[in-house]
Length: 172
Image 1 (cartoon, rainbow, N blue to C red):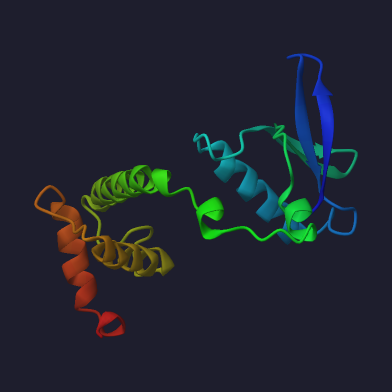
Image 2: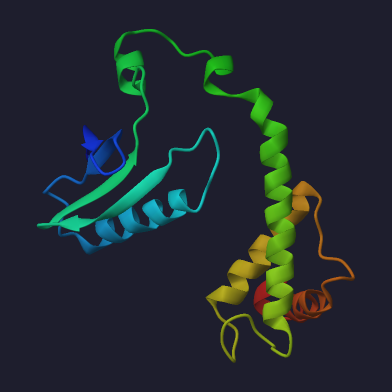
């Protein structure tokens, strides 16, 4: 979605990439909202295999994102050239253990945050059952797939999950 241009950041004396949304979607609220969410999500991450974002915004009605410039062949160029990409080239197997550790740490952080949020509360976001509760139940239950369960250190979370299990809408 959009076009990418090479540019020069004269303040920091470096080359950057500027992604510009096409004018056909420049005023579409949903597209702009997704563009902003993506920019914020990328900006929150720091990893050698994730593009760094420096800025995003709108100027004269044009939505843009400024990122680090990655040199080399584009995926489109590689695919158009008729050269197949092997599974080994597409997947960096060495990063899998690190990503798994980060994922487990995020699950634990989620449990801690949810446990704190539920202290003295019956529901996650409001004074009644809501989409936030459903989303949290799905996340907590999905964590079992990676063999992570809330433990004794999450008493509020355990209390809340037990109460959610009693709801007719949550029974299996």
